[in-house]
Length: 105
Image (tube, rainbow, N blue to C red; front, side):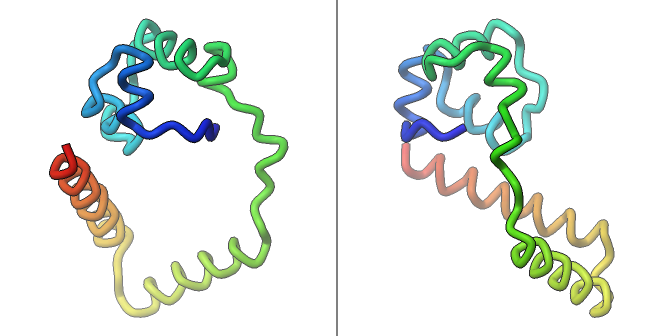
């Protein structure tokens, strides 16, 4: 769901801390309260149901992109990168993004 708001703008409109929204966005905090979700929905001018269960009928992945990701994943596996290591790399990247967002504040 894209509304063109920055994280700061959404945080201000919803009355929720920017850092908290960032943890939700990066799936670090994966279970926000209904109260917080309702504030976000109001700020985005959508129903709570639309926020938590967006219409995915329009989100059909491009088959070439799916194939590209599949090939990349297969290449990583064939090079000896384990699933655990790949998850670790992803978590590290999420941490890096969080650090750069904190520096912008």
